[in-house]
Image 1 (spheres, rainbow, N blue to C red):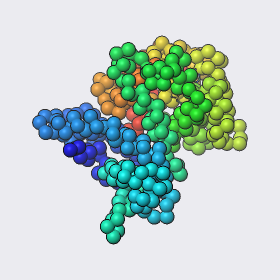
Image 2 (image 1 turned 90 degrees about the horizontal axis):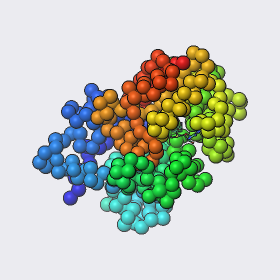
Image 3 (image 1 turned 180 degrees about the horizontal axis):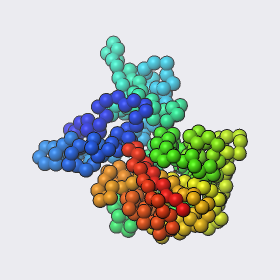
Image 4 (image 1 turned 30 degrees about the horizontal axis):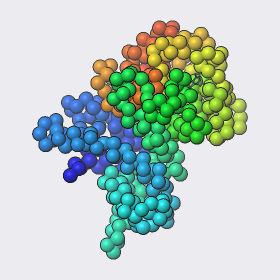
Length: 389
Ligand SMILES: C[S@@+](CC[C@H](N)C(=O)[O-])C[C@H]1O[C@@H](n2cnc3c(N)ncnc32)[C@H](O)[C@@H]1O
């Protein structure tokens, strides 16, 4: 029998303002003692006897939980329930998502155990509805929806993770093994088709709908009127900058195909506050700016390429300007947070990079000439580093 997954820390309803992710990355003082992990499965258990066996089973079967989430999103279960006038029974959900009633019932009941759905019984029949968690993050209509991110994780990341042992053995990403495409040019492999590129960009955007404010207010950026979001993708952070720092202007710089997709599928303010510029940040002239935002850019690349990019930014940056690096920071001893360690393995299977410690970033940034290194762990998924020229 499968063990109870109660230690996924989902035993209470989450308010929409406090994400599951932020709970997983609660400050060390709030974590369970001794484990060094951030609120993860098994935190309330020891590692011997029955507890140890239960923990092992939770780890072994953890992928099933991810797949329940991915499948329910993919099928549109949460959207159907959000659009329904009231709770729905199995037959109505199965018909709505065009699935078997047996499979639907199993999926819905598992979602209830995972606190993704609520159930009530009327006249012996079960009726399902969304919880606060699924309403906030798993329905397309929610402004904090993570549906595209989950679809991307389910289709692309999950595939690459199936080759983790090979990635560890070879020390490189697994696009060739997973999708049959070589990854000599990393983003050509990531953007395998127009559809893949659009989905990746939608996934990027969704992350900042939840985390954008915390990373952009970690430091007061009001002294940087001209910003450049390097590798800014769909421009989600640029839009957040405008709302937080009125009067600033942001250039979103990305490869030509991303800029083309951004113009076609994403909306931007009418005024000139956001400018989209295409180019290769390793080769082409960079836009002049007071502040360069590098959000989840350096973690894609090995140290050599990061240094090359940072030196280019240093030479273009206005005097007194700086860089805001937004990444998930590893603890200095690299033993946590667990979520960031997992992200680093995700970088191994999917990119040429890794997650790094503050000291590692300090070394890269100071070698490029930057000074006044400050970093803030936000307590959410992503942390912020500010340096100046
Ligand atoms: C992991 S995504 C991060 C996107 C965005 N900064 C965010 O946090 O949502 C990396 C971004 O870098 C862009 N990129 C990759 N190589 C690039 C290059 N050589 N020149 C410009 N942009 C590049 C990708 O197209 C993508 O938008």
